[in-house]
Length: 282
Image: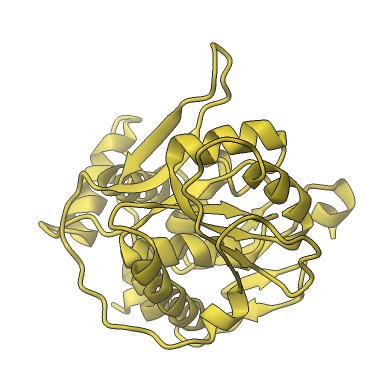
């Protein structure tokens, strides 16, 4: 049986309970290994190789193979490891795009925490999130330059030292100590990864909606992210032929989990910058 065929054989649910199948899949895919959020991308590379249809960004027209995504993420991860303290937060504020997924895997490679930033917040609210999370680095699309500049200009004690702009169109200079081009980092050199097993270490961070008071930061561990990804493979019966349209916000859990689940089974990602009926229909 080929690797692609094997991973598609998601165990069936028993008596309507998917937990049985999830446990079987976890046992087969992980065994006794530690939870590693980088693993889905490694598996995607095995299943799809150099197939440049694995990740399609409709906003830029770019297409990537999982191998290309992994290579870029390794280089960005090397920079993050050198720039952000162990366990530190890496803020990501972009529209739905290939770079959003790439940045999450870069944080996983570096064993740093990906902080999902909601660009629909006000500057004051954004500053509150960045302060509470103690974000040290931001990966930002220039379309949010004014919001980020205003947030960093507040009187809050922010830990942000570097901003990596995802294109050369940034029109605003912020008060961060260092401003870089993401593509320059992605084109740099990659170091050697030294993975430290710790299932309870942080992997992803989200802020609640704040329906009862201020939003609160919630950190998902590596175990949370990995087991949730595998559980979704079972629940959705995911397979290599599946194509996932990232139409919901990738900064929200309603869509972010698919970055890991779809990649794990070698499926295809398609991103659109924002939801519109016309874009989705096309």
